[in-house]
Each structure stands twice: as C-alpha cells, then as structure tokens.
Amino acid sequence: MKFIVGTVLWLSGIRLVPHIVALMLSSNRVVIGKDLDRWGRIMSGREPRTWSRRIVLFVRLMTFNPEYRNLFYHRAGLIGLPLSLLCRPMSTLYIHTRKIGAGLFIQHGFSTIIAAAEIGENCWINQQVTLGYSNASDCPILQNDVTVSAGAKVIGKVTIGSNVKIGANAVVVKDVPANVTVVGVPAYIVRKDGMKIRLPL
Image 1 (tube, rainbow, N blue to C red):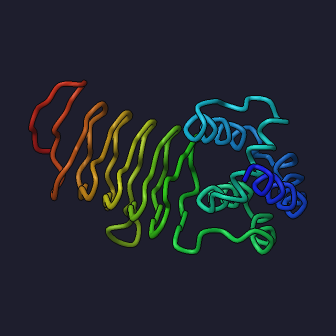
Image 2: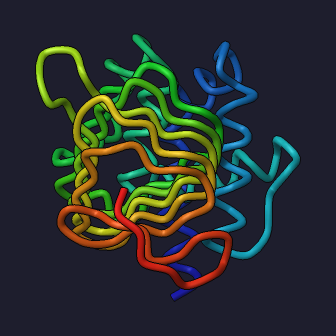
C-alpha cells in the first residue's frame, strides 16, 4: 500500500511542477506556508515548517485533498485559473472572499459557500456551510480562530468574534461576541469563556 501511495504521489508531483513553481514565486507565499503548517498540524499532528517539507505536504494535499486545491487556487490569484486545469478543484466548494487570513482549514468542503467580507486567521469551516449575503452588499466578517460546523449558516452583515464556535446547522443572523459557542435556529449562546450558559444573541 505504501508503495502504491508513494508512486501516486511521485507521479502527481510531476504533474504539480507548475504549481510548485507558482507557489514559490507567489506574493502570497508566506500565507500559503502558514496554511500548509496548519493543515499539517491538523492532519498529521506536525507542522512541516521548512519549505522542503512544505512542498512534500503540498503535493500530498493537492493530490488527495480537493478542498486544499480550492484554497491554493484562491491564494494563487489569476495564475490559479490555468493551473486548475491540471489538477481540478472541488466543484461544489466556492470561495468568494478577498481577504482571508493565514491558516484557513476546510474540512469536507462539499456544498460549501464562503462569501464573507473578511475571514481572520486560523478559522475552520466544515461541509455544507454557507457564509453569505442577505442582500446585494451585506455579508459576514469572521475574526480569528472561528469554527463553523457542518451545515451552519452565517448570513448578512454580522461580525463573528474571535474564538467562536458555531454549532452544526446553526443559523446566525446577529453579531456574535468573542469566546462563545452558539447553536440553534436562530442561534443563541450556550457557552461563554468555558462556562455553560443560555443567552440570546
């Protein structure tokens, strides 16, 4: 099995040479490096930290994790369009957010729409999530270390504070303060600073 995986990665690495060149020349290289460090830490428990190890992880992620492909092409900008013909992104994951901080992790990005005004650092987004508009111009802001669980919806001109966890299938249409967990439809606070509570937003 290791031989098969190794062979697949080696062949994929050849296909990904243009991607690696684009990565190393990218103006977003530092941010992409931080993305790779976080994905490595989450998926294998260790950060690559050096560029040689990051490239190895990059090849693995581009080969086996289509969610990462979407994030990389977003970071790569216009050069990502022709590169995506060589290694296809996930077709049901849409990223329409200009400013995304380093370390975004997308887990099972199936049927996910990321259309926020801004996303901070080290956020985590699961499958079937919608971060979206309530009208032609109003969409959410996520600060740092926000987790959006499967099926959650964050709609309109709302700000999600740092260190917030949004529970599965929650619907958030109001601002959420920092350091809380919210659940429900409409969402309400069930934990604040580690203490169980029940408060409306």
